Amino acid sequence: MSSGKSTLINSMLGKELLHCANEATTATITRIHNKDQQNNFNGSAYNFEPIKSNEKARLKFLDYKSVIDSETLKKWNADNNINYISLTGNIPSIKNSSKHIVLYDSPGPNNSQDNTHQDLTLNLVSDGRYGMIIYVLNATQIGINDDKLFLSQISQVLKTDKHKNIIFILNKADVLDEEKGEDIEIFVRNIASYLKNIGFINPSIIPVSALSALNARKVLNKEPLTRFERNLLQQNIHNLDDDRLIRASYNISDEVKTISLPNTEKKDMSITIKDGLEISKSKINQLIYFSGIPLLENIINYKFQKTTL
Ligand SMILES: Nc1nc2c(ncn2[C@@H]2O[C@H](COP(=O)(O)OP(=O)(O)OP(=O)(O)O)[C@@H](O)[C@H]2O)c(=O)[nH]1
Ligand SMILES: [Mg+2]
Image 1 (cartoon, rainbow, N blue to C red):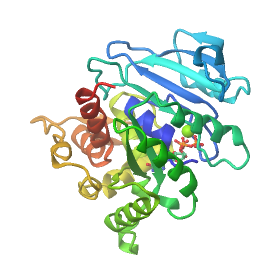
Image 2: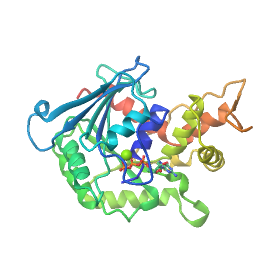
Image 3: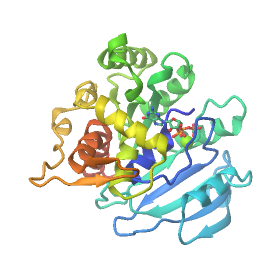
């Protein structure tokens, strides 16, 4: 819960579409169907009853909007009748191959106040119609959330199908203070042993900062930033100024790791954000690269171009 799953998807979208907050937030499964050429998102809201066997019979249609914005999603997410949302639109960093790529956002399974969140997420994992799980861990809470049981359930599900795999994301890597001994490589290695003990044979782990990628992409897309976000962006530009997150990634092949650095265009340009804040476009592009998010996007594109599910 609150590890940054919805923020991670928003960072791929380059805008704040899914509702994110510092509390148990996502109450629905949100299915996002990538349509490379479609500018706006459209979407429907449903009531979904986990457990029964026939998917079509379980989904009860409740609402449709031809243009979806964050306010609609916030409203749908807060509606107790709605627990399944289906969106269609362009995820800019994801490219469809012969098949269309679909991402699912799920509620955090460890919400002690609401068991239906766990049911929805477990149902999604057991349902089987996916190729990869992106499991988002919170770097600020390692060892606090006891997710051992949930992880071993996932590991059992994955053992039954060799075409499915899992990638672990260590999010919020931006808040680790290396000078205080919070070394990212050590964190990643400790998590690798934790996961191996649970039954994941050679887990792949990527440390990322979804929030810094999201804020940087919002700047490129001319989306407004709050004062808090502008301050954070400046801080992230100073702190995440090398490729240490990418170097610290674990069990990721060099073929995938050598993603192209952002273009260092001969003529850089300065972007005016607000209140006299100017940042060069090259710095923004570097921050996106150093956030680790493009590495994950490359892995998704790479996997689904190679495998037919
Ligand atoms: N510092 C930092 N904060 C982040 C990052 N990613 C997300 N957050 C913050 O963490 C909080 C929770 O983010 P969400 O995206 O709502 O988390 P979630 O996993 O979707 O949460 P649930 O849906 O409730 O399970 C928000 O306040 C985000 O701004 C990150 O990379 N760095
Ligand atoms: Mg969420």
